[in-house]
Image (cartoon, rainbow, N blue to C red; front, side, top):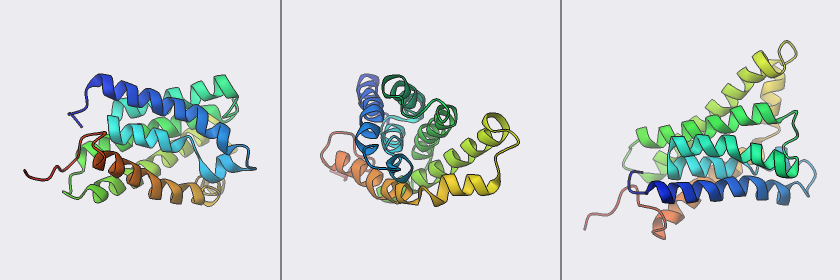
Length: 182
């Protein structure tokens, strides 16, 4: 979205990085909430969609790193794969939203979001299999950890993220993607 200044993009990204610290703290009061809700994913996806791929990538790297340093969440054992996953989410979400132009806001949002969610999971799974858990990570473990256990988070992300972006556009807090002809 070229209409947002770099200052506004920076402020929105900083807010999203802050949410990467605050949201997990709220959700982790519930057992297994990190896996079930993946609260850090939403701000990263929003940063990519609203601010573009470079800011989404920054949020995907800085958010989990800052959260781990401040709160200990995610634990250091999970941090490397989360950095890869969330960086891919922010990057791919932003790139796809720049490239996809169906003339329908929700179609653009869902296409960008679904591709990013798949790409992030694939990239993180490959990183785990080849780098972080080399030789001990299986396709079954990947499927279970990135799809079976996290299906509630996927549903929440698919419901909330497009609605938030559309609401911000409607409220004129961010530029409309397809402004109505005057």
